[in-house]
Amino acid sequence: MFQSLLRFLKIDRFTFLLIVAVIIATVLPAHGRGMPVAQMATSLAIALLFFLHGARLSRQAIIAGATHWRLHLVIFSCTFIMFPLLGVVFRPVLEPMLTPDLYKGVLYLCVLPATVQSAIAFTSIARGNISAAVCSASSSSILGIFITPMLVNLLIADSNATHDTQQALDAIWKITQQLLLPFVLGHFSRPFTAGFIGGHGSIMKFVDQGSILLVVYVAFSAAVNEGLWSQTPPVALLSLILVSTVLLAIVLLLTSFIGKLFGFSLEDRITLVFCGSKKSLASGLPMAQVLFAGQAVGAIVLPLMIFHQIQLMVCAFIAARLATRTEVAVFDEDEAMQAAK
Image (tube, rainbow, N blue to C red; front, side, top):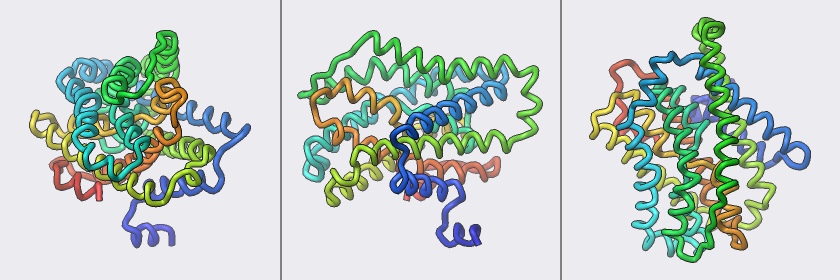
């Protein structure tokens, strides 16, 4: 019955679960004492995800991922150059469709670092270069602490952006605790855990997908608790959904094309697509409280929240398709456009 429903809707099981997570967060959002519990569960799931990735990757794979400078440079360029340029170039089209605060939110979305856990999880599901994804996504979050405020000051003229060095150090320490430390511990546990993990791929899949579902639920719960639906006119919401979808489709096409242009392998192109097209909700929400203090923060972060949900669902579908590919399959622009639709 359930499988028949999925075939009728033409979606995979994971995408269906993502939609269910959004619906549950809308109807029964985590709040009060339940929110810290949900956030803690998400943090533990992400830590476990990185522990398992560290245990699965060999020392040679980590070195290869860290030294793949051409791929990392292209991913960072997509995140901090291509995205902001798109936000500026399409300003004449976007401003009439959106309110000033919503357009400011689109620009803010464009200057954010890449998300970490979902980019790596999708890369893993799609059988991309996981070691490169870990290095790139983690580095993007750290670099974003410094680059994002500068880009906000440059592109959003009326912002009173500030940058607290202590906050940057705290963010770096938080990333180290939650991501890098579990990864290192997992890697050094390889003599004891590599054999078990290698023979139980279902565990990796469960952690990959489970961590993303938790992130979706917790992030959307926070948005609903802040009055996401009551504060947004339907027309503005529909326009914003359209803008977010088109922006993501353009970036997916460009990252796919750039990967082929630079002659990257299929695994590297998968990493480029998932790391170069994602924007971090986890980093974006707290940074907005500082960068836009005294302004309409709710409206400014709304594009980020919508884009985040769309990118998770679209990338989940793409990752599921790539996971079933044969060794000769190629991810090209046509496939990206079809998947984005």
